[in-house]
Length: 110
Image (cartoon, rainbow, N blue to C red; front, side):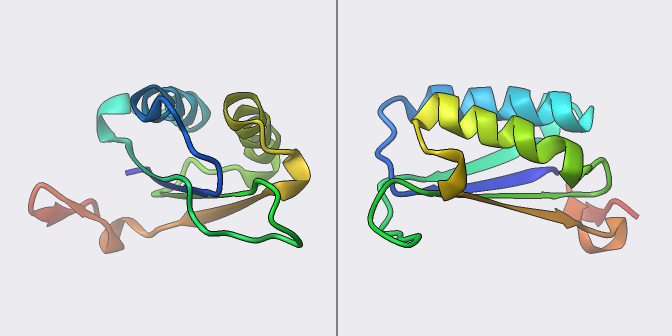
């Protein structure tokens, strides 16, 4: 935790680099250790937001440490800079998960 799920219609050439950069971004935004951040990337997906131009759905789940009003701009800027997707073609979903509903290493966090 946190868990980031990125779905995009764009083909990402250097997936490993994007995964690493996303981990660094989320670590800095949430103040959580990079060793606990999991990132999933589904690129080159069939997606449509008004038309067939590039778009992205960026989903972030975490136990606390989410501040959507402060994070949205930074995440949108990141997606635009790394994938060239216009900010009006990016949806971001924030989900604060109770510690009792998240497990790791055979036990829940709360």
